[in-house]
Image (cartoon, rainbow, N blue to C red; front, side, top):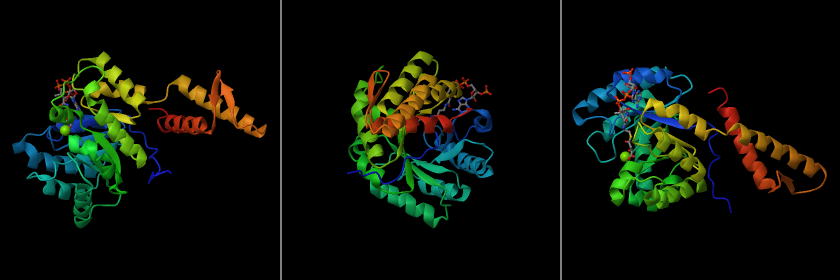
Length: 294
Ligand SMILES: CC(C)(COP(=O)(O)OP(=O)(O)OC[C@H]1O[C@@H](n2cnc3c(N)ncnc32)[C@H](O)[C@@H]1OP(=O)(O)O)[C@@H](O)C(=O)NCCC(=O)NCCSC(=O)C[C@H](O)C(=O)O
Ligand SMILES: [Mg+2]
């Protein structure tokens, strides 16, 4: 039985860049950074004293809408903090593509955010992106993902998750794999997009690329980023390669030809191809089209 509640969103979210909401220069610079989406941050990247000013700055930047093809989101402070409700009101007024809510652990939190957005008159276009970054969120990821149609994206918070687990950041991320997989299962069960966590060492290009490849192989749609230099490799590694596009086309052609000849199975490059591989080939081509030219 297919439990998926919504069709996967075809919009590419290969590269999703955080930028500190208090940093005016970064907000301006983002207009020319080729990220698929931006997260204007009011949470961890902003010091407590700077939060009210950052809130105004971020809301004004999002409302102006000068970010071209880039999806613009605002990360509010977590539910239960002194800033959360004012942040949500500012988001509702600015009407970005989404509000990113950190430390979501239950469907009840998603419903509370949904009610607050509605009460503050947020436009329907403002979706909810839920960050899952605690042990409870991993164990209850299904309930979070299922909570609302307005929730379209799950975002991994791997720094918080590692902290809560007392885990170490190691190449290959073995300590985090159970949590990553639980969140992926929940996202796919409910037809949501899911983004991988950030890579903290902005000078380690090789380590970053290895983590992008791992995230893509696990099934993530894209990765959250902290530095502009991470955008280009991330776009490249989360987009289908020329070989994948070529193979997808050949799979579709070969299967159509086999179907016309009354066969339901065929081989391409010596490998068995059935209907499900054709579905995957179509997904690859849709992503290729959606990222064309960028
Ligand atoms: C990580 C940084 C602090 C590094 O800063 P810095 O050493 O100053 O970088 P550079 O000198 O190399 O910067 C070069 C230019 O690029 C601009 N820049 C840097 N980062 C960004 C950015 N994120 N967005 C836009 N522009 C950016 C600089 O302004 C320089 O510009 P110019 O002056 O014109 O040369 C820094 O990169 C940074 O602050 N990154 C974002 C940090 C952040 O947002 N953290 C919070 C999100 S991650 C998180 O919360 C994790 C999650 O919750 C979890 O639990 O895992
Ligand atoms: Mg976090």
